[in-house]
Amino acid sequence: MAAATVAPTHVVHHDTSRAAVSTTALGVCILRAWESKKPEEHRLFHDPFAAIICGSDSMELPLMEEVGKNKDFWMDFIAVRTRWIDEQVTAPTTEQLVILGAGMDTRAYRLDGLKGTPVFEVDFPEVLSAKAKLLEGHQPQAKLTNVVANLSLNSWDADLRTAGMQPVPTMWLLEGLTGYLTEAELEALLTQLSKLADPSSRMTATFVGRDMKEKATSMHRYLVTGPDQISALLGKFGWHCKIHTIAEISRLYDRAEHLPRDYAYFLVSAWRAA
Image (cartoon, rainbow, N blue to C red):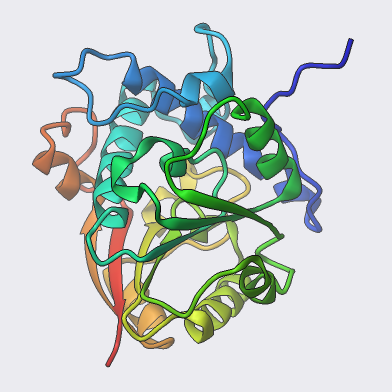
């Protein structure tokens, strides 16, 4: 009997100290499954595919102890981040969505607002193949295409074009990605992304603050001092941006109880400069 497909906890990575980066994608998936079990009136989103990927009801959260926060914190953190990003990527102006470092993201399957929209998920082969196998009995609502790449090494921009990405207004999603790249890797990625981006494109991204250093994983590489550093970085590549803290957004959704007001994690909405 063939072994059951499971979500990977390690990938082939040129930097062995970051080979467990897919563990974080699994942890986020588990949190989405937990949030989705809440009564409809209390949850911020519903992801019926998360539990399919993650498995049993008695799931443990990878890296919880390493980053020093409890389950209540992480439930609110991921619920708020997911809901806010859901709203960004389903805006009427989204003609195409590219998810860099897609991990166990299921937006192409679960969001009505992406029905019929071309969605390109870019990640390590182990991650994309496992997710496709686990969800093979389910049809995505979006027109989903997988693009295999190591975003810190490969010429993924050429791979995207080969996969059918079109020169139309595109939403670029970098959720939980920037912190796991070195500064040089992130600048190289933004260079490639910005060359591909149509003038009307937008970007949704998250950034880890330097004040979180003791609470970040050992795999984190790029931490920011605050909004000014993010604005300067994105401005260098022709992007304007609006920056929020996770705590600020949590108050909009009435989920601020477990998120410190000064928590240094940033949600960014960006658009191409004219």
